[in-house]
Amino acid sequence: METQIQTCGQTPSQLLIEPHPPRSSAMHLCFLPQSPLMFKDQMQQDVIMVLKFPSNSPVTHVAANTLPHLSVPAAVTVTCSRLFAVNRWHNTVGLRGAPGYSLEQAHHLPIEMDPLIANNSGVSKRQITDLVDQSIQINTHCFVVTADNRYILVCGFWDKSFRVYSTETGKLTQIVFGHWDVVTCLARSESYIGGDCYIVSGSRDATLLLWYWSGRHHIIGDNPNNSDYPAPRAVLTGHDHEVVCVSVCAELGLVISGAKEGPCLVHTITGDLLRALEGPELCLRPRLISVSSEGHCIICYERGRFCNFSINGKLLAQMEVNDSTRAILLSSDGQNLVTGGDNGVVEVWQACDFKQLYIYPGCDAGIRAMDLSHDQRTLITGMASGSIVAFNIDFNRWHYEHQNKY
Image (cartoon, rainbow, N blue to C red; front, side, top):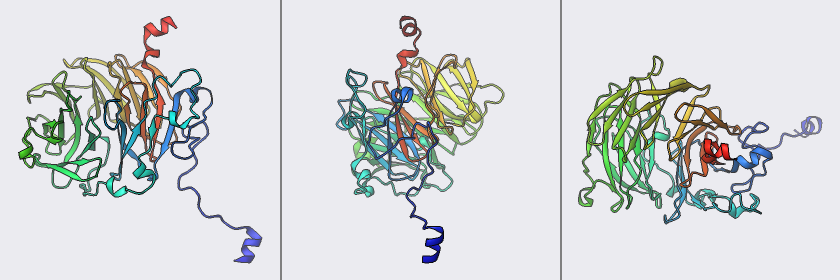
């Protein structure tokens, strides 16, 4: 062995467990968690920070509930291995872009990693250990975080339930039954004052159930004395196959859902089927749905095909992108669409006609989930490499009045 070392040299111990990111990638400079990023030129303006979790498990869900009045404003992340993190949000609006503002000052970074994850000290309080059905592919639809960041709802369990966990303790607080087969997707409406909202669950039994989340009692259902057997508000039927994606808008009183095959369906929150959204010839397998309060419904189908429907069922626009899209979201005014997928590139589109507005610097890993901060100024993406990336975003800059003025 000594002769071999003298002749050929000695192989050092492995330092990294991931390949080096390519040059000019948005993750090229990622030092320690929370360390500032020194990007050049455009990247300096676009990327705020990268946070790398100790776990390499893909970040499959991101929920940015960042309102200042919350007891814990945070970006909650959940990985493929069902390890969640409550990453505290520091409101940097007013600082960002101000004279003398510098990303080199760590306390100006908007996201602080969950100390229990960073120190590896309280992983037991952050791990959802209950077994999910082996046939379930964990994705962003499997999780919902309540508006106060205090509870996570998780589906995919073998016993056909979905479950509520406390983010503070990691403990199971409620098990909800109602479906005849495994629950495959969950969605939450916008919250009312007090934290009340609608929860929709979709299942392999081809139905959806509409539930009511009580912000006061932190349970599914109105009655805290009957939390073991809550009743759904409505049963939504009409699909012929397993439900894979759903979106609910309380303001419009609508639920839009997609099954493994067939058209998306529009139901009222009372359970009435309004119409089917029939896409063009090749748009048969919906995978992602986003609805704006203005009544526009963006549906992403298999193989990067997108359609924009009005809630009256009229097809307004369609496009095809060269990416396996994993996450979509609409800006709060419904004017802009943000997409991300396996190519690791965030793209911004005009929602009404799918005109491309901007392409962000590419990341070295695929994008699995996205969310926007409450002020619509920060985009947070969950990456397949176990990181989250925070991007600067300003939808006003793509508004035609702003462009004409400046």
